[in-house]
Amino acid sequence: MSRFHVSQIETYVRGLYEAEHWIASLDDVNNLSRLLARWAIELIPGDADESASTVEVTDGGEDRGIDAVGVNTTAKEVVFVQSKWRQDGTGSMALGDVLKFLQGVRSLLGMRVDNEPVHASGGMRMAIQSLLKTPGARIRLVTVTTASEPLSDEVSQPIVELLESLNDLPGTEPMAHHKHLGQSELFNAIAERDRPSVDIELNILDWGKSAEPQKMFYGRVSAAQVADWFSEHGADLFAENIRVVIPRSDINDGILQTIRNEPENFAYYNNGITILARRIELALGGSLSRDVGYFKLSGASIVNGAQTVSTLGAVRGTESEANLGTANVIVRCIEVPESEEGLGQSITRYANTQNEVSSQDFAFLDEQQHRLARELQVLGYEYIVRSAEIPRSSDRSKVIEIRDAAVALACANPKINYAIIAKREVSRLFSEGPVYAALFNATTDPLLLYRAVAITAEVDRVLDSHQADADGVEAGVAIHARRVIAHLIMQRVGAKKLAYPSTDFAEVLSSVESQATLLLAALTAVFPDNAYPGNVFKNQARVQQLLDDAGAALAKSQNS
Image 1: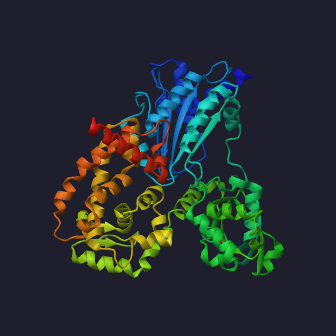
Image 2: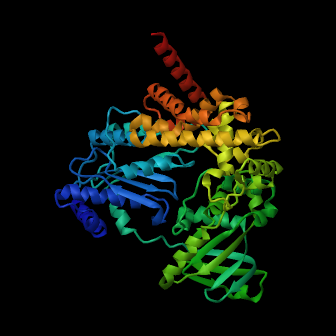
């Protein structure tokens, strides 16, 4: 049956990608491997917003291991694919091919490799590096083949070892995962490619309706009932949601805190959920009163509120489960027949482009922020406190945004742990009271703030230049060490000098390029093998060890 399955897979991938990705100078096997790699990116669950995706097929007769790369900025995910087309459908993937693939991945992630050239275009390299700077970025390794046998233990082991290196940051969800797609998974993907049909029955309290231009019902639903949906249907509930469920986000934490402490206020605090359905039916008994309506939704998909639903589902089996019965969720259910798919896509898009209130936004309520805005204005700078605020000044060099200010002040703080927090999770600079108070308080100096922002921006500019010209570990350190490097430079300058009005700041700023370049070289030289820079520079103990090693190496070179 293997040849039959392979022939079906071949017909399918040719129909999808042959016109765009077939290269006449390559043989059929290499071309089919290219098409398979391209399809594999689509088979990985993620964000459906194609406008946010960049995909590059790199496989060819002389490829160096990575056969396709996909970057999705909305899902914050980069996918690396190695594909192997086996026409007879037998066997599995070879160890040598996988090792070559992993070396290519290491190189693109900025890890130390043995002169392995980067097999991706300059544009894709920049897209990957830009994504890896983003908090919450994730990495997917995909091996895909038409062979029928699973990966052997010998082949799987180096993949596991790389994942352990990428996921070695304590206290965080794993950022890297591996998925193997073999012949059976590929064939099943063809056979089951239609969206799973989900039917939901729900009781809506205090319900209302709108008949034109679309049938819509809205009201309150018990959080316990919503949790039951997730228990029964899982991720199938979100088949048409442009967002994936984000583990351990600050939104999820807020949902959990409300369920634990104020379940009766949940409907007031939460934004609610939006459900699209092919058909909505109201039971006869429910139509007699607006107190409670009994509804059946056929072909349902939750297009907004995935975090709410999944987090409520996770409460099942915990000590807070009883509180689900006290909490209610605001829902709106919209009927979108299959013939009006375009409308459903528009609702999905606009329901997910509303501005969410983050912990950063609450800084607007802090009088210290308004004091800084006034004092910076006297210095000639416009301070943007609200995230959606549009600057009045047309000169961007005279505009300082609060997020940049927080990062710069964290780097300027004498304690390196604040710079590491700025690297690890910028939102913590605002959400954790003691951290926020250490940066923004009555003693925060506006001149120091401006100068710290300028130094941090100059470090970014210098390291962006190095990153664009470098490969491997140097590129990785240039991407991920910039907060630590900015911290080291500002500690050399000193807080008093940064805040002193008579300081020749132009001279200070002109020295940043040489200092940043030297620090980059020193950290690169002692960076450990098999370590991912994105994790190292989020861990205070590992950063301190790296700085100690760099200092020792520098002292040794000066004494020799």
